[in-house]
Every structure is written in C-alpha cells, then in structure tokens.
Image 1: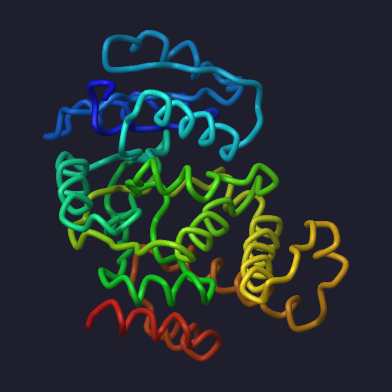
Image 2: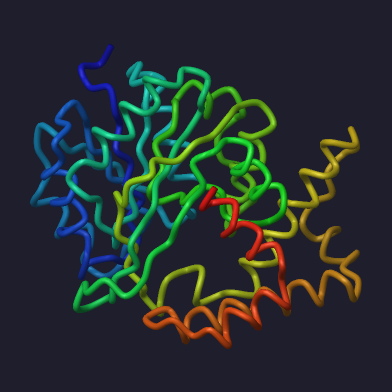
Length: 300
C-alpha cells in the first residue's frame, strides 16, 4: 500500500478562477487518508502556475498536452494501480466537495464490497456567487441506477464519484476515443460487470458555468452519448461496435429527434434551474417520461 487509501484525481483545464477553492475543499475533508493527483491537461490560462504553488506532501501534479479527460483519467488509474491505491475519487477542478464526502463514500464502499463505485446527491451552485441554485438527486438502489444508465439517464454523477481502482482496471478504464460523454461509456461498461450505489447525503457542489465542456458543445456531447448507448447495445448482442464516424453515417430521423429532445430539455432545465416551474416539469414529463419515472424511483 502506498500509504493512502484514496487517490483524489482532479483533471485540470483552464480553471484558474476556481481550482484553488476546489483543492481547498479536499484539504478540508474529515477523511485524511488520501493523496491529491492533479492532471494539468495543457491549461493556457495560468492554472498550471497557480496550482504549482500548492504542490506538497499531499499533492502530486502531472502535466500533459491537451488530450482530453479520458487520457488524463487513464494516467490516474495507472498511477493508482502502480501505487496500489484501492480507491479513486473524481474531483472536477471547478466544483466543491463537502467536508464529509470522502469519509461517507469510503465507508459506503467498505460496507458494500461488491460495489464498484458510488456518487451522491449534489447541489448546483452559481458559478460566481456560489449560492445554491438547485439540487441533483440520485437513486441509492443499484437496480434503479442500472436502469437509469441503460436508458440514457445519469445514474451516477461523475464529478462526485468514488471508484474502486480494481474495477476501473478490469474494464480497461476510460476509452480515449470518447473525448465527449466519456462518463456515459464508462458507466455503461461498469454496470455490465458490477453494482453501483449512491450516498443519500448531499456531498458535492456542481458549479454551473456556461463555458463548461458539456454546455459549450452540446451537440457533440449528445452524439457521443448516444454513440455510447449504441456501443452498449452492440456488446449485448455480441456484435462488433461501429467507430464514431460509421455511427454518424447511420443516424436516422428517430435518433435525430432524440438528440433534439435532449437539447430542448437541457435548455429548459438551464432556464429554470433556480426556480420551480411546474409548466416546464409537465412539458418534460410529456416529452420524456423516463425522467419522471426516474424521479419517482429515486423517492422509493
């Protein structure tokens, strides 16, 4: 054992305004048996210089040219495997972890040895004021989480996730050709072999930033999301997966409609995140009943 039971992994790309607070939220954890690994993915906004001042006993910094989060996370998985660190916690460089996050999630995985990963309920916060503007709930039941992921819903929240290193190694880690929606592909492959759970507590704060990857290139993110789902169906049918370009060439009107639906719901969610809009909720329920079913299952 390397001396730490959790490797907290923070992929970093141009988060100069937020990364210090993200790091501090790990320093303030009630659970102290961790190492923080920061993977600077070719930042050009001064993030690298800022974080260099924090290097020390608890922090290791690795740098790479801009290659995307999948490449960065695979370096982290290999690092944890070589150092024999049994757990990997994902931490996004513009978000915040609540003080008991690692303690609660570590305990949850210790209590459930067959579970490969867990996340938690989360708060959404304003990018600048850090005021709580909404919540994101998750199911605690493994069967419900699996249903959500298989149906293109969230299941786990990647930034708030704690993984078993051995499980990530067994499935081959992240797949580099998923530069977008990499978590969809990862979670789909995890549920093929393992159970997943979530902590019921609110342990993470997600900063709503209009410049985030998932919001700035919604179309491509959604196409890779549906590509991951199609790859999963191919595996279940014991058929070879198409490459992404082949997948794009096979898109029909049904999938185009699904992509449009997801973009519409996302815009609707963004415009109403800070308030309850019952008309919007009704509209989402009519357009996509899966989300209503998921919300009901999370309350059971």
